[in-house]
Image 1 (cartoon, rainbow, N blue to C red):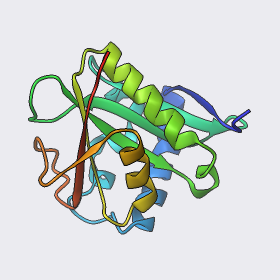
Image 2: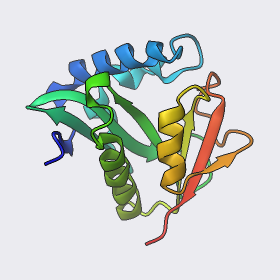
Image 3: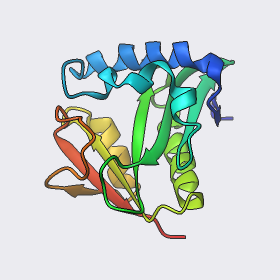
Image 4: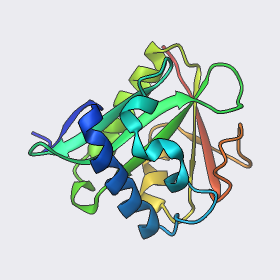
Length: 163
């Protein structure tokens, strides 16, 4: 038993997810302009990820939401490329395998939605997250793809999605 549960996002998760994102991002210095903490979707994750080509999953412990992750089409990016988005976990969830489970679930959803590649943006100082991405076949890029508006990010990755 991993100690956590993974399920699709629901509307009642929105305020909790917003609090999670707003708690975790400043922990890594990601709270000014150019970071996902300022995205309008932070306050309505369930609605934003109910659109075609999107999926979002929450991770809970004993029924309490402690984090989540999702995918959606890469804004102003090449056709067939999705972006791993809003993957954040409270400290008590880290180290339990939740990141691996959520990433696997997101990549499975991306394949099912027909995406050919998955892109993500992160920070140099998010070393544990970057190690997870690299372990799962994400390859570093030397510049961003698309135009997400997250100019505060300084590391970019892409993964080819095979069937």
